[in-house]
Image 1 (cartoon, rainbow, N blue to C red):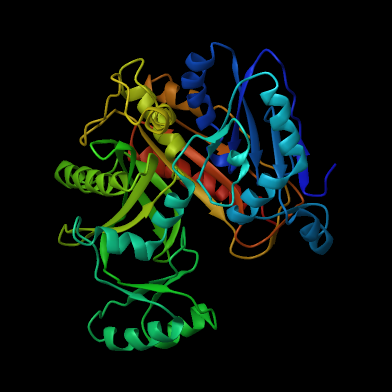
Image 2 (image 1 turned 120 degrees about the vertical axis):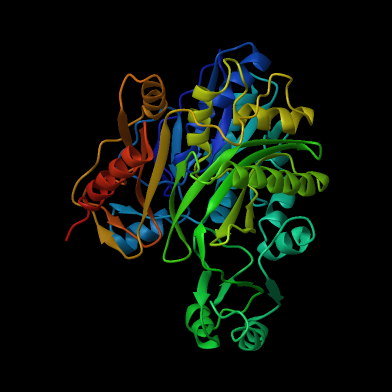
Length: 460
């Protein structure tokens, strides 16, 4: 086996229609929803071939390859049982040139006329779509990359939605110089981030120029400075763009942020008043128009803050699927009329038809379905060792159905635990959990127990 491949069980059949999923395991479940759209297109049974960067002890998926360009290096440094997170750009580049992947594409295309690539995030480093009859079923790669630049986002939207005060700096020296004048005015602090950052990486809340120096050291790049505002809520909105006039809003969730900038999970429905959610729908639709005018087609998310006076401010666009896209799909399947297209189906229509199907139904801002969900992601900050494996549950969708129909009051699934007796490097997702219940309190208590169970797998 190639030294970049951790696990492989691909098995092809000439009678089936295949597509590739390329991205982290946390969104693998979205492929079940996409199969519906592709089944009507192909008139054949549809299967997914998944290529993931998650390095785990065990896998209970069919047709999956787990690989990383860092695998051999990290095994040499830390031993065979090592788990780590691969930067997605490196992963995409490796997948694009991997002989096993290219050979698999040739085999698939010998039995079907085209092959779709379904990615968690469209990345320029993914070049498989340059091959004949291979296409990306998602936002255009270079535009998605441009839109994930936070400095670009603020310049694009400053006159369209309420944004926090900001400055764009071309270098670390300029950031240090400008921030020195801003700290007396922005008295709660300055949020400093590199243009490309996510989930708290490459960003920090600072109170003086020295804080910037300590966080970013000698790293010289462009920086975005935004006024840090004390706030009560961190809502996030998930949406899909088909064209500048058709923007579908899936709903509003409340993010859980620890340490001021570290995202660890979300809960839904949002506990914000309906009037606030209506504004968030309006602002996100305006963001959708702006990026739709540039040619963006597909799923995206927007993050906001709500201050103590109830004022809403835009924070960032995520020009990709968000971490809770799958949970939104499961919830909307219980809320919307039977036969309503899912979010991956809407993205399929947006990319291939430049419109939504007539059967699309958007949930109302005040949607109160009688059940709730919440997520928790355990991301390591230090190198740790695990002592045991948590069960790898695969019945998340069924849990939503049972709770929504009142077959059970609450429940949870534990997902993607790295395994037992493994060295886990900093920045790795050790495990995640999803809780579903009939009340926010039930979800909160269930998540708390799951957090303790995940923590207990780490050696003292």
